[in-house]
Image 1: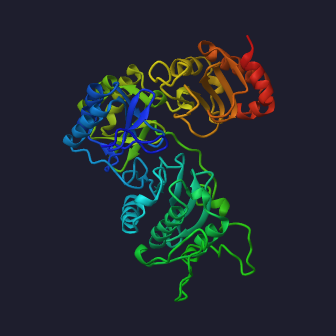
Image 2: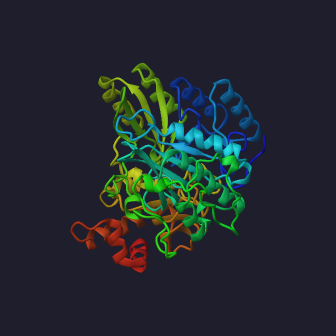
Image 3: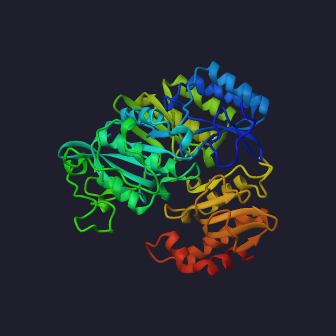
Length: 496
């Protein structure tokens, strides 16, 4: 096993990543979830070999921190002894209730397996970067809209049955749509996209594809196996059209050609407005967090969140033991840092819900802690300059009213921004000068203002007060921040 992997890589079980609090490993079970006794075994391993903190990531991965080179090796041996099969290769992800939800348009698991096999047959795993990923969304109550991916397939209902929307580079609301296609073409185009990305090098993502390449993908269809797909390169950037004159797979589902006869360089594909949404009419549904009760085809699931994505292993053991006593058969890992307790008898959920609340888990989807991304920070992480979790708890307790769905708050112990690599409306970042405030940026950006780290929560409280004072009726917190402008926000943050 490697001692550690470089930052930016995925810290798999076989390649732990060095962080400020030791080595970090991430587990993605092949089954998508864990037997309750297996989760208890993992928690006990984390107590023996790590710092005893269990984390669920924004993408639904399970992380164990605070490892050494030797203890990581022992952890890997114990994971193997527990019989937990861990996924390797290019991540091809499905929803946390895949195949279980009655509202699902299509079970995404067969499609995901077809794409996994095709990726291996095409020899792409070693050629793609560690963070290149594919999402297969079958619909239902818990979509994968919040998860960013290089390739996205979303099931849709059509007059012909079930089709797939394929898009690249984004989450469910800001992807670049390509086409509406049937299942065989979906697999082939997904692999073709990944080939294009691989040709650009291991640092590349689907966002790096040219407009010409995306138009070519949108207009192409093939039923040939990936092993005989044409060679694709950034210089050529095209896929040859079918020689037998068959009807385009996109047109089967009511779409017109992505490129007009006159060679229009405009929209990538038709129905772009529809393809960015989650309904047949095209209106984007609001993302539902995986917290609360979900009806399944057989029984129920209770979604419970981990505050800021982490929880002491001992508390997770206690909750899992309660779940076993109540009849839970599986515990799924869900995006947005949550666990799904599956197989719960209808009469048992209030008891498990109360046990989770007592232990400090997130049991309400409106809990303000779900609006804050916070890394371990000081003193847990040696790189942390501020006590991120303490600051986050104070802000969540005192400013629930301004933490609406429009506002993203990121609290980072240092400029690495591990908990939320992308931009946020407000970012607090620890540094030599204290807690810096970044407006509409990432933790790597130069802060516009500072105040002492121990007083950072008070500074955000002053920003919250400014929002309350200036907000128009019905206006979101983010819209109010935009009106206040960076100068106004920073002035409020620095105010005593």
